[in-house]
Length: 288
Image 1 (cartoon, rainbow, N blue to C red):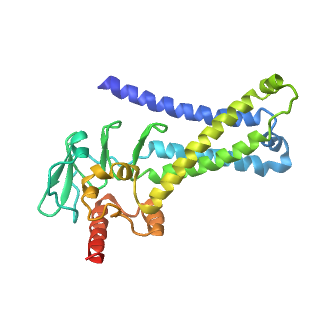
Image 2: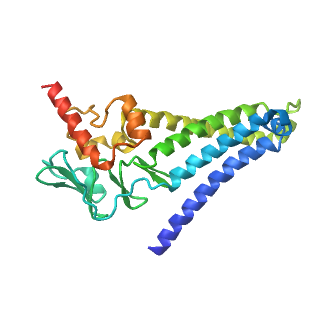
Image 3: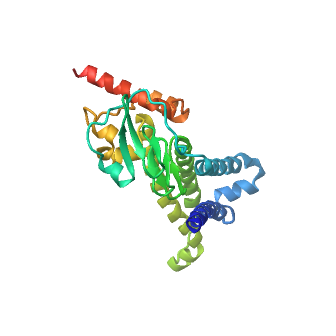
């Protein structure tokens, strides 16, 4: 067990060190080779340009490490939440519970999920992460690039990281594309511009990945949903037993979802069951 823990810790350090090397490698290629950024650094009258770029690099790294080192919302061991609503369990365990050591638990007033691996009763929207071996509040996914879970407390930092990184990459692509040295001979052009060409490939691939993720998680933030709930809806008991398969029991309006629930995190884990119950009751009343 100790060896596994040490391996996981080294894996985290390695992944995050690689991210730093990648970022500083691209920035160094723009600084130490002819580019608009290099020109701005040596031109004292244009100090705002390189300060703004450097600040954007810093903010992107800041949100990266905030996402990595913020507790995503690990559920304390032997924690029993104070439930006030929810859905009663009326049938056998679903596939999701069986596959992850989680079982539904029926009480007199509410529907709970019990994690046999953590030996706790899970709050609504929490899920056991097999990589971290912990239950996480409002679990979204385990991110291999950050080597941490994305959950209740760091999802907004993850979204900010994607946004700032996307802007940084677009700016870097503009700088890199303007720094290529023209040459009549093809082999000489490749030799002269090999580092710029490598940086451009890295930037374009990164832009595709971050843009797709930014769009997806922006939709999740606006609709108050998660990757796990979208992908595994048919296996999640509190979702697959709803009266309408398209019903989102946590949707409270796009502005409310994004600013109040997502960015400000004003709805805590103990209140998701209240939101859930209210939303389901409204839907049932509307279609009666």
